[in-house]
Image 1 (cartoon, rainbow, N blue to C red):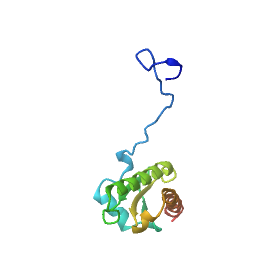
Image 2 (cartoon, rainbow, N blue to C red):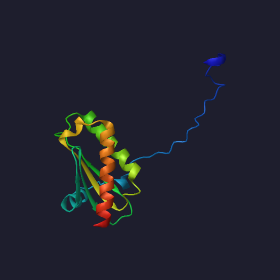
Image 3 (cartoon, helix red, strand yellow):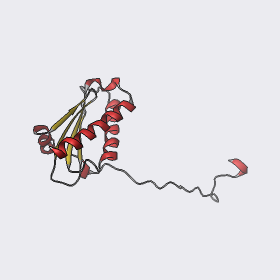
Image 4 (cartoon, helix red, strand yellow):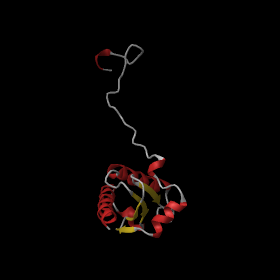
Length: 137
């Protein structure tokens, strides 16, 4: 360490960054098959080359997210989990404006042809479409 200091018992390293956990609690998820079915049966659809997003108003005051990322679309579990993390993070960032909507996101076959940046922008566009249509229709 610089200055001859050793990180031992006498040296305290303090974390100055306050980190709030931005977990994906059970309240924010679609958990039951019946909840998914309601969205699949009557939903607004937003489609592009990367994602198919289905959305439907709910009676709650919160947005809930369901993910349907199949092995048929993304063979590797690493790829599926990466896409799920990207979707969840985007959902967390837009959660307030999506309040009162149940959403199911599905991956399209061409998703791997796009960069991480393109996928984030795609999700942002989908959230905007959902807010405009579901809330006003």
